[in-house]
Length: 402
Image (cartoon, rainbow, N blue to C red; front, top):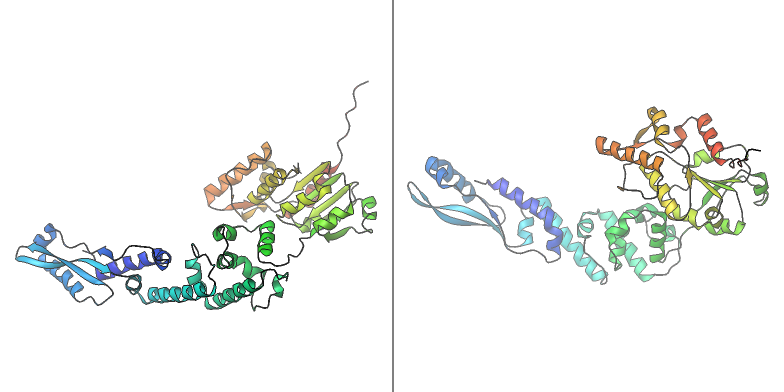
């Protein structure tokens, strides 16, 4: 026999699960919640408890209406509660004040947005639209209104005359912005894509100007430095780097900028690119990086670092890795910390030692519920620098025996 609080809890759970569909006119009404009236055995063995239960429902003053059925007791026929019937979403929402408040807010916001943005697409965003706080909702409306009126403004994001809208806010709410502007693709997929190329596409779709992504360089060869005004360290856009016309023998790509600055000596024919994180596409767009006779990559030992390597090779850059193997991890395991877990089951472009390391990281995440991270800066520099310079040195030509 279901108690009133149990039945209303079931209705509330149903509301939380389904109200976005109800707001779009979906669902079949009325809905009926079975109250589990007493069985024949219960009616025979404990009729007093059965009638006490029925009394609880007689005194029920909550939302919905009670359907009853006539059941046989030892003393005769008696009406017993059978179903709690809810005729509308509002009735279902009214089981709890917070649910009712959510439903009313949902309706008010949808009505406002449908009138303001007739091209908007609401599938899969209603819950977020309802649950976003009042300040962010005002920012959202202001942003979509302004962008709709100025589809090709060419402004930088921070130049928009909307209080509180910056890169962080747009990154968090871009799925909502695109949907309200009438995006035809799936805003959920767009919201999940955090790559540099995705951010560029987003700005372009919103008619905004994209600041250039800068790649930081350390030019280790004095002769190559002469071509860039003697600078050892500088940052430049892809277009500017292509215009330089550098032709290094070796390009070293480092995940973190700190490691790039740690290399203080000169190395012939070598340019280091560092600090761009996971902007893989930008590296592939620089002609002299893509065409370099030798490209070396050294990054953190973790799942994202190996994903980077696989993607880099997938873009046509045949990078060799250093210090990214299981032996290095095992040697410095005491310096590892918790990190990001694997995002993919397979990385098709890894070499066998890297595949072995990735399999180990995948298994660690499965066993412990979290990823493992050995940051490249944690490896003692005296060892790391020796490994790196050994990898940079041109291979010694083989001399056949006389």
